[in-house]
Length: 301
Image (cartoon, rainbow, N blue to C red; front, side, top):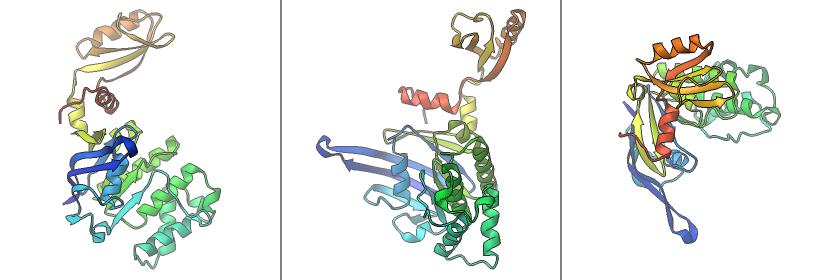
């Protein structure tokens, strides 16, 4: 079943004397149950506007948005939808346990094991030890985990996340990525924006690239991997670069692009010169596609 559908959605804003700004231009995409859809773009590209449209925070737009087949303009469409903004505003005088209990109450969910259920989700996000501490005493990363636990405790069928990894340390990001991956395996749908492109690449089934309000391309990891699949980036340490076109990243550390047929010779030459191989990775990644879009070299849909 389709969890989220955008059909030719456009939205413009009045921008004072400069006229209007086109925030979204005929945006079309779908997100199915059990799918993770990553939404990527630079600041001001239209990511937050897209979220506000799907949640009916902005309702004066052209086109149609549907959540599980129901118009987003109908409040009933948001039943079972959980949203975590980039900068969660939680009541600072409350504790994480109280925040999660409040979520259950707001969603009309009654459980005999309410306390145990809430504590289970706090433990899942590795914040059970601060369950009864006031929000105002917690770090930004811990508050972000509380907001994510607040979303998960209601067992949503669609998660809408705006920069969910913001403010998290590497351990926190891994915890969240693992939880989101498990949620997906259980049939949940996720729409999320993120500037942490490596993590988007890890968990998203498809990526939507938005730039200046236009959805430039939608791709899957398989399609991404197929682009220039025979090209690799080789990073190494050596007294001098192996090829004239190699980039010196820092003193004695170089990077160059080679084909798969060239790799054996490159590695042999590096060994003969007494150098050290650091990494070999595909030449095309989510990051390289992202920058090509910004440079006006957008890939075809």
